[in-house]
Image (cartoon, rainbow over all chains, first blue to last red; front, side):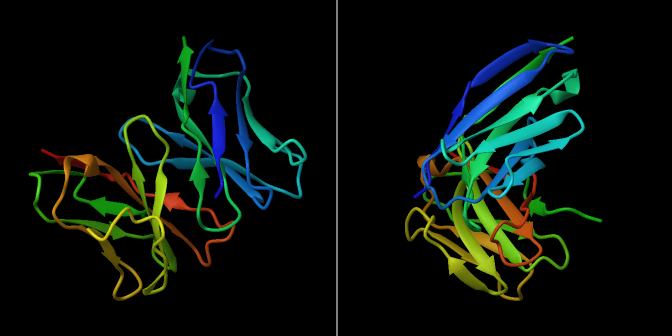
Length: 110
Length: 115
């Protein structure tokens, strides 16, 4: 099955700085890579996703890149704000069975 | 519109007891999923329903776990003879149709504590 590795496990940045989270996956059949944000006591919320036929996608302050050859993908958040503080999960999948990374706890310090 | 809802939000039970966790998916979503999230980990897939039938239950850890979706909408996850290791957050998600590459919308979860 799919195996998704995510790092770093924790990340602390100053407000306004950028944050980068990197992931690798094992299953070359994976073609769908969503990113979820989870706030304390809440369920995961989709923030952006990318499919295997695209190398990069951007939505305002958030961008994702995908390198299928190397089997890695990453999340970039620019101009971070305190409300960006949460746990972020990268996810790999080729069908309905999503495989989550272990998560990155992002803390944005005012 | 309303999102995925789950009840109860918290459940404390004693080892050996039976529990039921309920999920109400987004109206019109035909696909429904259950995940389990242990402390400090990402959610792990348990089971996937397409309509009323369980299309894939390969993630259920053992035969103490069972889930139903009799009318193709609300789903119930049932755990028999609970063990302390069952303590986790149980998340439900739904998507509009067949799961491949469809956005899965998650509920807030049920936090289960087995004493």
